[in-house]
Image 1 (cartoon, rainbow, N blue to C red):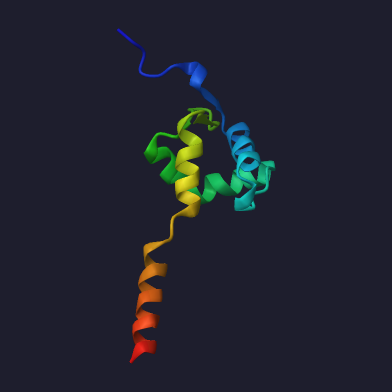
Image 2 (cartoon, rainbow, N blue to C red; image 1 turned 180 degrees about the horizontal axis):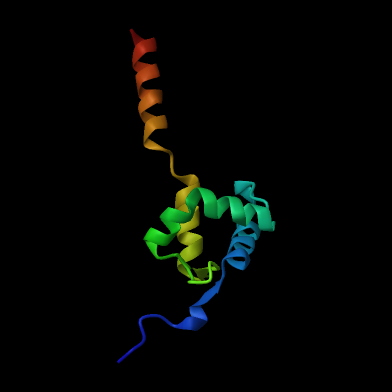
Length: 96
């Protein structure tokens, strides 16, 4: 029976965040500890739901080395639906 996941694929969340910030400077992320804290606060639920991050019973966060960058990039570059709807509404009002 194979393990559900290989423990070697998981790294500390802060380390994963710092690597991501260095790999994508165009996103303007700070590679600091506080940047990682803010990311956990704002996107933590989505990262947990996607399986890119997990939270241990001690409260420490870990991130999957392969999944984390892909999920983070999608989260940070996605245009919120409400913003798109508002833009469409503004454009239709200006056309009238």
